[in-house]
Amino acid sequence: EYKEIATPSRTKEILKKYGFSFKKSLGQNFLTEPNILRNIVFAADLSEKTNVIEVGPGIGALTEHLARYAKQVLAFEIDGRLIEVLDETMEPYPNVTVINEDVLKADLVTVTKEIFEEDLPIKVVANLPYYITTPIMMHFLESNLDVAEMVVMMQKEVGDRITAQPSTKAYGSLSIAVQYYMEASVAFIVPKTAFVPQPNVDSAIIKLVRRQTPAVTVTNERAFFKLTKAAFNQRRKTLWNNLLATYGKEEETKERLTVALSVAGIDPKRRGETLSLQEFADLSNALAEVKI
Ligand code: SAM
Image 1: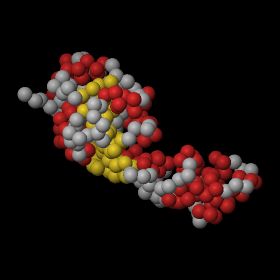
Image 2: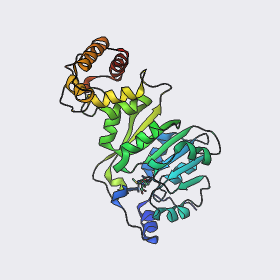
Image 3: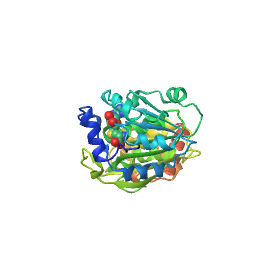
Image 4: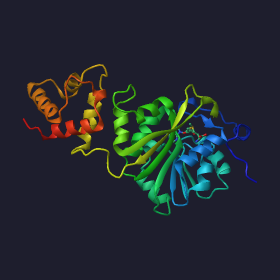
């Protein structure tokens, strides 16, 4: 008989059996709201034709739902104390593999090749440890792993930054880093009351779908990301002042920047936060062209 892990009573029972105490430093807030889990799995649109990577399975609340719909589930859990718990709770799910490792240190391409038996589209579905949301997102985006979709829970405020449009307060280099590769949207908001222990902030489920090709065409990705970081260095400064702070104030540099800005048709007095992805790409490509 199937007793769902993510109810408050079953979670309590499991935690008590293992004498488990939460580690705040590891971002341990466990979901105890079955409906939220169902909505996450629904948003991820899983099937026998998908493999899933989960970050931080905890005691397996989300993992068991993933296991029921996906072909295989590969879960990274850093906390060794949870491995014996998962050995028991995941016992009915032979398609789940738990690896006791810091996901940020994992070589995703190698591990997935080793664990996934079939070469199916990979989706990342997780209730992320909030203290490292951005590093985890960047680790997946910058790895050479072909992730088709990510459906991930994070602080609502970080979700706002990831999905932000130009000329809004939340728009910044993180919005650009993510939206360059993925189409980003908020799937739904989750109240703090859905977790034990309750976090201080509300959360959001963010859905990211890989674009066929990046959102904009750039001649040099590293230079493009360097430029977007430079533009948001100090939000209240003009684009011009932020660019000088990163690229230097030499006459030659100023001349290069002036020419590139003019080629891209961007007023140097604008603020970085008003530039669209396309404008950043135009400016980056112009900078690469200008040789003085
Ligand atoms: N998935 C469970 C749930 O929804 O109830 C737990 C989610 S909890 C927000 C985050 C989980 O990530 C914890 O189990 C924590 O131990 C784990 N974790 C924290 N840092 C990690 C890291 N660097 N690599 C892998 N797992 C990590």
